[in-house]
Length: 83
Image 1 (cartoon, rainbow, N blue to C red):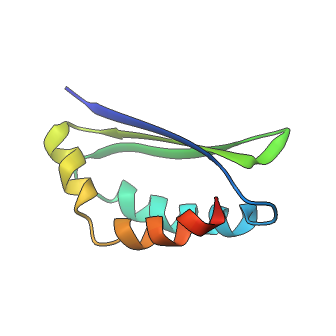
Image 2 (cartoon, rainbow, N blue to C red):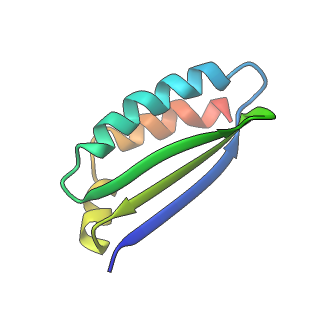
């Protein structure tokens, strides 16, 4: 059974460009994971500070492997003060 993750957050005023760059780099790494089936991020047309991330993993094991990836914690640490 696949594992799906949905995240929603709002960028601090003026941080949306930096978040978009962080997401671009992070998405590339996640999409290369063996068990990742999808990693997509979106913004609202009428609110570019609103972000959504949609992730799908092959199964629970693939999701757990994703959580252990060495680039996850640095991404979250960089993202946190921007939201």
